[in-house]
Image (tube, rainbow, N blue to C red; front, side, top):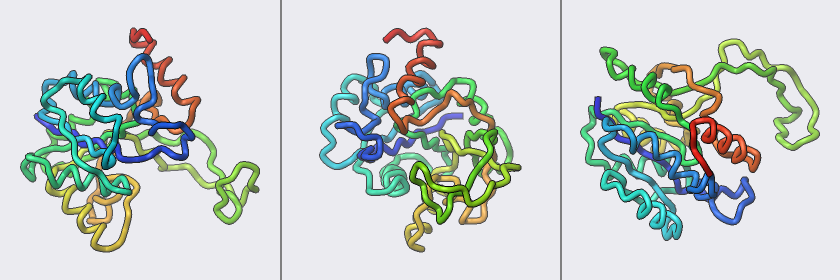
Length: 237
């Protein structure tokens, strides 16, 4: 089943603390975003990719030139992830019934087996879509007053039964996802991922087991882990 890809990449990555957005940091000889795009560019089922970047982004043209793939186009993203995804969907040439995969620009270690498992959803009659996810294994603690700072006190232990950690890609039909994101914006709500926007419209996306190697770069140590994952696949830095 052909599909298209949307990649929100307009974030500044300020929490990472680097001089450039984390999606452009070097990883095994290439920018992180180039690795994040590669699984789709290697896949003949991928009909096109729209990358939503910040206005006047000086880094993306260099990456786009290095990819030299006519399937890859860009648009201007927005302040929130959902704004960037919606902007890409609004300029997409896909039909409403076409499948769209949304993938994080800072998630460079997606495996082909994960991608194939997620795309199996497209074979299911009346499928709404789904996302890669991992069941939680660690014990969860809620901090006092919701404090996220190191050294805060434990308020309670949170049961982890039935809890999953959402990954990407997330897979939905173009029209349904676009309409869900439009509705969220109209209601003044900001979904943290595409699945949440679909859930708000009464849908129940499918959870597809992903890999712990499919990490999102959020801290400097994640770069070293991602490099090790790529090296295990024969990539030489």
